[in-house]
Length: 478
Image (tube, rainbow, N blue to C red; front, side, top):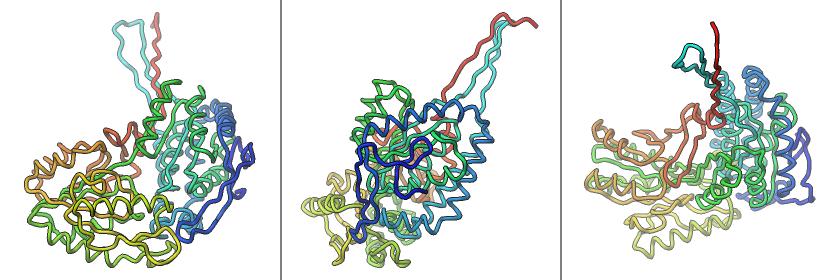
């Protein structure tokens, strides 16, 4: 791999305008790399290269494409220790979490390599004996991928793997805060023999690069992970060229802890799930609705477990909570805590900055939280645990649904009827019942309402890169 460059048409290159940008380690605030930082012109070059490569890539059999994806997966697994350290340094997460992220990234390439072999069509019986009707699934064309910084390996891997398996070339723009992990993925694909132009990576200004993707008629689909505000802008812009969209726009996941749940077990699991990646996870459980009879016991276990979480550099094997991604993001989370306390919430633990360099914030537990305060009602994306009580399941479900988000939700109970009532009525794309990680490589990752449209992962993620064609034969003589 040519260190820290863009990758266009099979070559590692700098930005056309010579732009550069530093990549900062959020745990030390030190520069760890200096990378090209381009704009719309780089993106256009990449799209044009991808379009030239499209015919050759789609003509390869699914088995030929799969062999390359499997080789790339093998490279990622063989280099997992080095790649995990790279991700720790640019994203700040604990090394164990970074290692697991790269293992899942490899799984995605391997799984889609096999799933791509299962793309098939079907025949439709005709109304007359002289007619034949076939339905085919074909690759949509060049796919643009714009990813978020919180999972710099997983986010691009799930979109790139699905598109390539479907026969689509890609142009990926990683998050400007964490581009190095995506560059490593592209390098593994290059080593695996993916032809020039099939995979392209550009890094630079978000707005001009996004506009170039929306404006170019050869880019037929755009996969985006990020904020609701940007997602809505992309939806508006996509109307100009009728670009298909897959949008994963975050969430505000409710957790319903019913009166029969094992409070200690659920509370311990809640702490681990809530503070994963310092809370910077779109499916992170955030709004905890705990039955009034269980709230006091639940709160005490949460506070005790949270106080035990070591905060520090992700390179330290004992660390459970790394830094937030930037100073600006930390200030936003601190503002949410301050607003919540003004609204009557109590800080049971955390809420302050450790006396050390880096964008750290102690994991925070809030009690007596008003459901209308932003720390509860909005997506936090930080190490903040907020809870409130409920009396009736119907009320808890109604409160859980009272959000513009609809990505993930969680229910904990031993009562099968209550579990079924809850998951059937919760307005979310993914529901975990006695489970903190409903999302997997082989299952669809999708939200409702303002959490997005389209799919990532699973066979649905593959089919979002395909278009349907009807072929009708007339005047057939047999």
